[in-house]
Image (cartoon, rainbow, N blue to C red; front, side, top):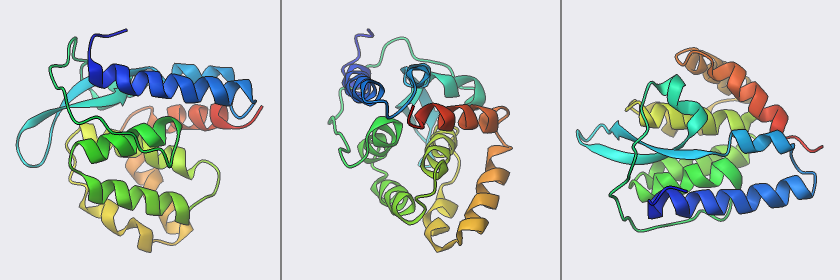
Length: 177
């Protein structure tokens, strides 16, 4: 395991949840391939670079590279309301000072509980976050009707070559056995 307290913190937490979910048949064993985390650097709209924990599978899609060692020793948090990748993403949003984005994601998770929406929002949000996209349009998504949200997600996914296929595979792996 990496010597980064930040990465180890999330990876151990995610591994624990993953192991429990697989054991109880709540998801497929293949889920572990999506649950390998790494650290990358991204430029945030405020103009400086920050280190962000991200699933390794998203690195090629976001065209970001991994950081060998993270020097950040942040205030470590865990969003325990959501497990697996959504919980890690929400925790990262809070750690990065993006509590408004985390609150919005949680609202979207509650409003749009159809299968696959949470996973799609999670992976897309991570891509947008690490590529430094302006997240303003995310703050109004709770106003969208389900079909409008689905169309918006499809359009946004096209910006990341391979994200739709990766998301579909991830959704299948998160389904109960």
